[in-house]
Amino acid sequence: MSRSLLPAEARRGLRDVAPILLGVAPFALVAGATAVDAGLSPLQAAGLSVIVFAGASQLAAIELLGDNAELLVVLATGVVINLRMLMYSASIAPHFRPFRSRWKALCSYVLTDQAYALSVTRYTGTDDLDSTARRQYYLAVAGSLWVVWQLCSLVGIVVGARVPPAWGLEFAVPLVFLSLLVPATTSWPKLVAAAVGGGVAVAGAALSVPLNLGLIAGGTAGVVAGVLADGRLPSDGDDADGGAH
Image (cartoon, rainbow, N blue to C red; front, top):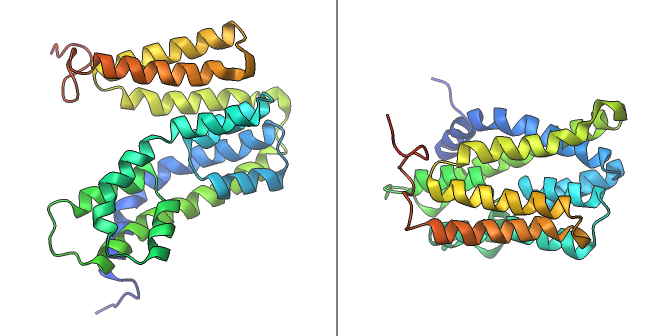
Protein backbone atom coordinates (compact mmCIF):
# COMPACT_ATOMS: atom_id res chain seq x y z
CA MET A 1 0.00 0.00 0.00
CA SER A 2 1.44 3.36 -1.03
CA ARG A 3 1.60 6.13 1.55
CA SER A 4 1.51 9.86 0.83
CA LEU A 5 3.43 12.50 2.77
CA LEU A 6 0.57 14.93 2.20
CA PRO A 7 -2.42 14.99 4.57
CA ALA A 8 -5.70 13.75 3.12
CA GLU A 9 -7.30 17.21 2.97
CA ALA A 10 -4.28 18.67 1.20
CA ARG A 11 -4.49 15.91 -1.41
CA ARG A 12 -8.19 16.57 -1.83
CA GLY A 13 -7.54 20.29 -2.25
CA LEU A 14 -4.90 19.64 -4.93
CA ARG A 15 -7.28 17.30 -6.75
CA ASP A 16 -10.16 19.80 -6.63
CA VAL A 17 -8.10 22.78 -7.83
CA ALA A 18 -6.27 20.96 -10.66
CA PRO A 19 -8.87 21.66 -13.40
CA ILE A 20 -8.98 25.35 -12.42
CA LEU A 21 -5.22 25.72 -12.76
CA LEU A 22 -5.53 25.02 -16.48
CA GLY A 23 -7.60 28.18 -16.83
CA VAL A 24 -5.44 30.29 -14.52
CA ALA A 25 -2.21 29.60 -16.43
CA PRO A 26 -3.02 31.53 -19.65
CA PHE A 27 -4.55 34.36 -17.59
CA ALA A 28 -1.27 34.73 -15.68
CA LEU A 29 0.77 34.53 -18.89
CA VAL A 30 -1.21 37.42 -20.33
CA ALA A 31 -0.85 39.41 -17.09
CA GLY A 32 2.93 39.03 -17.11
CA ALA A 33 3.33 39.80 -20.80
CA THR A 34 0.97 42.77 -20.60
CA ALA A 35 2.86 44.26 -17.66
CA VAL A 36 6.05 44.34 -19.73
CA ASP A 37 4.13 45.63 -22.75
CA ALA A 38 2.75 48.46 -20.58
CA GLY A 39 6.27 49.67 -19.87
CA LEU A 40 7.09 48.04 -16.53
CA SER A 41 10.55 46.58 -16.10
CA PRO A 42 10.72 42.79 -15.54
CA LEU A 43 11.53 43.39 -11.86
CA GLN A 44 8.59 45.79 -11.46
CA ALA A 45 6.25 43.38 -13.23
CA ALA A 46 7.35 40.47 -11.03
CA GLY A 47 7.01 42.61 -7.89
CA LEU A 48 3.53 43.73 -8.92
CA SER A 49 2.49 40.12 -9.45
CA VAL A 50 3.77 39.01 -6.03
CA ILE A 51 2.50 42.00 -4.05
CA VAL A 52 -0.89 42.51 -5.70
CA PHE A 53 -1.78 38.91 -6.68
CA ALA A 54 -5.30 39.90 -7.61
CA GLY A 55 -6.05 38.80 -11.17
CA ALA A 56 -8.59 41.24 -12.58
CA SER A 57 -7.49 44.23 -10.51
CA GLN A 58 -3.86 43.43 -11.35
CA LEU A 59 -4.66 43.62 -15.06
CA ALA A 60 -6.66 46.83 -14.57
CA ALA A 61 -3.75 48.37 -12.68
CA ILE A 62 -1.35 47.35 -15.44
CA GLU A 63 -3.56 48.91 -18.08
CA LEU A 64 -3.87 52.16 -16.12
CA LEU A 65 -0.13 52.30 -15.46
CA GLY A 66 0.43 51.79 -19.18
CA ASP A 67 -1.86 54.78 -19.82
CA ASN A 68 0.13 56.90 -17.32
CA ALA A 69 -2.88 57.27 -15.04
CA GLU A 70 -2.49 58.95 -11.66
CA LEU A 71 -1.39 56.58 -8.90
CA LEU A 72 -4.47 57.51 -6.84
CA VAL A 73 -6.70 56.38 -9.72
CA VAL A 74 -4.79 53.10 -10.00
CA LEU A 75 -5.22 52.44 -6.27
CA ALA A 76 -8.90 53.44 -6.28
CA THR A 77 -9.57 51.16 -9.24
CA GLY A 78 -7.93 48.24 -7.48
CA VAL A 79 -10.01 48.87 -4.35
CA VAL A 80 -13.27 49.05 -6.33
CA ILE A 81 -12.59 45.83 -8.22
CA ASN A 82 -11.52 44.01 -5.04
CA LEU A 83 -14.48 45.07 -2.89
CA ARG A 84 -15.92 41.59 -3.36
CA MET A 85 -13.07 40.27 -1.19
CA LEU A 86 -14.76 41.92 1.79
CA MET A 87 -17.80 39.70 1.24
CA TYR A 88 -15.60 36.63 0.75
CA SER A 89 -13.71 37.40 3.98
CA ALA A 90 -16.89 37.88 5.99
CA SER A 91 -18.28 34.61 4.67
CA ILE A 92 -15.22 32.43 5.22
CA ALA A 93 -13.97 34.03 8.47
CA PRO A 94 -16.06 31.79 10.80
CA HIS A 95 -14.22 28.75 9.40
CA PHE A 96 -10.83 30.36 10.11
CA ARG A 97 -11.64 31.64 13.61
CA PRO A 98 -9.54 28.98 15.43
CA PHE A 99 -6.45 29.76 13.31
CA ARG A 100 -3.51 31.62 14.79
CA SER A 101 -2.89 35.16 13.58
CA ARG A 102 -0.02 34.21 11.25
CA TRP A 103 -2.19 31.63 9.50
CA LYS A 104 -5.04 34.11 9.15
CA ALA A 105 -2.63 36.62 7.59
CA LEU A 106 -1.33 34.03 5.12
CA CYS A 107 -4.86 32.88 4.25
CA SER A 108 -6.00 36.46 3.62
CA TYR A 109 -3.03 37.10 1.29
CA VAL A 110 -3.79 34.12 -0.96
CA LEU A 111 -7.58 34.59 -0.97
CA THR A 112 -8.96 34.46 -4.52
CA ASP A 113 -12.33 33.84 -6.14
CA GLN A 114 -11.42 30.23 -6.86
CA ALA A 115 -9.93 29.49 -3.41
CA TYR A 116 -12.99 30.97 -1.73
CA ALA A 117 -15.51 29.08 -3.86
CA LEU A 118 -13.83 25.68 -3.50
CA SER A 119 -13.16 26.03 0.24
CA VAL A 120 -16.63 27.25 1.20
CA THR A 121 -18.15 24.44 -0.84
CA ARG A 122 -15.90 21.93 0.98
CA TYR A 123 -16.68 23.36 4.44
CA THR A 124 -20.43 23.74 3.99
CA GLY A 125 -22.43 20.86 5.42
CA THR A 126 -19.30 19.10 6.73
CA ASP A 127 -18.97 18.83 10.49
CA ASP A 128 -16.05 16.37 10.62
CA LEU A 129 -13.34 18.82 9.57
CA ASP A 130 -11.25 20.26 12.40
CA SER A 131 -9.37 23.54 12.03
CA THR A 132 -6.16 21.80 10.88
CA ALA A 133 -7.97 19.93 8.11
CA ARG A 134 -9.71 23.13 6.99
CA ARG A 135 -6.37 24.96 6.84
CA GLN A 136 -4.72 22.11 4.92
CA TYR A 137 -7.48 22.09 2.31
CA TYR A 138 -7.54 25.87 1.90
CA LEU A 139 -3.77 26.28 1.63
CA ALA A 140 -3.49 23.39 -0.84
CA VAL A 141 -6.02 25.13 -3.08
CA ALA A 142 -4.91 28.73 -2.58
CA GLY A 143 -1.19 27.87 -2.52
CA SER A 144 -1.46 25.98 -5.81
CA LEU A 145 -3.19 28.94 -7.41
CA TRP A 146 -0.49 31.29 -6.11
CA VAL A 147 2.39 29.13 -7.36
CA VAL A 148 0.90 28.62 -10.84
CA TRP A 149 0.02 32.33 -11.12
CA GLN A 150 3.54 33.47 -10.19
CA LEU A 151 5.32 30.94 -12.40
CA CYS A 152 3.14 31.65 -15.43
CA SER A 153 3.37 35.41 -14.83
CA LEU A 154 7.16 35.07 -14.81
CA VAL A 155 7.04 33.17 -18.11
CA GLY A 156 4.81 35.91 -19.51
CA ILE A 157 7.26 38.58 -18.31
CA VAL A 158 10.22 36.85 -19.96
CA VAL A 159 8.40 36.02 -23.17
CA GLY A 160 6.52 39.32 -23.27
CA ALA A 161 9.76 41.28 -23.26
CA ARG A 162 10.65 39.58 -26.55
CA VAL A 163 7.29 39.96 -28.26
CA PRO A 164 7.39 42.52 -31.13
CA PRO A 165 5.08 45.55 -30.56
CA ALA A 166 3.40 44.75 -33.88
CA TRP A 167 1.78 41.72 -32.26
CA GLY A 168 -0.58 44.07 -30.38
CA LEU A 169 -0.57 42.39 -26.97
CA GLU A 170 -2.66 45.26 -25.57
CA PHE A 171 -5.74 43.56 -27.01
CA ALA A 172 -5.16 40.62 -24.66
CA VAL A 173 -6.32 42.57 -21.59
CA PRO A 174 -9.87 43.42 -22.74
CA LEU A 175 -10.18 39.90 -24.14
CA VAL A 176 -9.31 38.41 -20.76
CA PHE A 177 -11.85 40.66 -19.03
CA LEU A 178 -14.47 39.60 -21.55
CA SER A 179 -13.67 35.95 -20.87
CA LEU A 180 -14.36 36.61 -17.18
CA LEU A 181 -17.47 38.71 -17.79
CA VAL A 182 -19.42 36.54 -20.20
CA PRO A 183 -19.66 33.35 -18.03
CA ALA A 184 -20.58 35.48 -14.98
CA THR A 185 -23.51 37.20 -16.71
CA THR A 186 -26.11 34.62 -15.72
CA SER A 187 -29.10 36.79 -14.78
CA TRP A 188 -30.88 39.99 -15.83
CA PRO A 189 -29.49 42.12 -12.94
CA LYS A 190 -25.95 41.01 -13.81
CA LEU A 191 -26.59 41.73 -17.48
CA VAL A 192 -27.89 45.21 -16.61
CA ALA A 193 -24.88 45.85 -14.35
CA ALA A 194 -22.46 44.72 -17.07
CA ALA A 195 -24.16 46.76 -19.80
CA VAL A 196 -24.40 49.95 -17.73
CA GLY A 197 -20.91 49.65 -16.25
CA GLY A 198 -19.31 48.84 -19.59
CA GLY A 199 -21.26 51.57 -21.37
CA VAL A 200 -20.24 54.25 -18.90
CA ALA A 201 -16.60 53.13 -18.97
CA VAL A 202 -16.50 53.17 -22.78
CA ALA A 203 -18.20 56.59 -22.82
CA GLY A 204 -15.60 57.85 -20.36
CA ALA A 205 -12.80 56.64 -22.64
CA ALA A 206 -14.47 58.14 -25.73
CA LEU A 207 -14.92 61.49 -23.99
CA SER A 208 -11.34 61.40 -22.63
CA VAL A 209 -12.45 61.86 -19.01
CA PRO A 210 -9.46 63.20 -17.03
CA LEU A 211 -7.33 60.88 -14.87
CA ASN A 212 -8.98 57.84 -16.48
CA LEU A 213 -11.83 58.26 -14.03
CA GLY A 214 -14.20 56.78 -16.60
CA LEU A 215 -13.24 53.27 -15.42
CA ILE A 216 -14.14 54.02 -11.80
CA ALA A 217 -17.33 55.78 -12.91
CA GLY A 218 -18.22 52.72 -14.97
CA GLY A 219 -17.66 50.36 -12.04
CA THR A 220 -19.73 52.53 -9.71
CA ALA A 221 -22.54 52.92 -12.26
CA GLY A 222 -22.56 49.15 -12.85
CA VAL A 223 -22.89 48.39 -9.14
CA VAL A 224 -25.71 50.93 -8.70
CA ALA A 225 -27.53 49.62 -11.78
CA GLY A 226 -27.17 46.02 -10.61
CA VAL A 227 -28.54 46.84 -7.14
CA LEU A 228 -31.50 48.73 -8.63
CA ALA A 229 -32.20 45.89 -11.07
CA ASP A 230 -31.97 43.22 -8.38
CA GLY A 231 -35.46 42.55 -7.03
CA ARG A 232 -37.12 44.10 -10.06
CA LEU A 233 -35.83 41.57 -12.57
CA PRO A 234 -35.31 37.78 -12.45
CA SER A 235 -32.16 37.03 -10.44
CA ASP A 236 -29.78 34.03 -10.16
CA GLY A 237 -31.24 30.78 -11.37
CA ASP A 238 -33.30 32.48 -14.03
CA ASP A 239 -31.84 32.65 -17.49
CA ALA A 240 -30.92 36.05 -18.80
CA ASP A 241 -32.75 35.18 -21.98
CA GLY A 242 -35.99 35.37 -20.08
CA GLY A 243 -36.14 31.67 -19.34
CA ALA A 244 -37.47 30.77 -22.76
CA HIS A 245 -36.75 27.16 -23.71
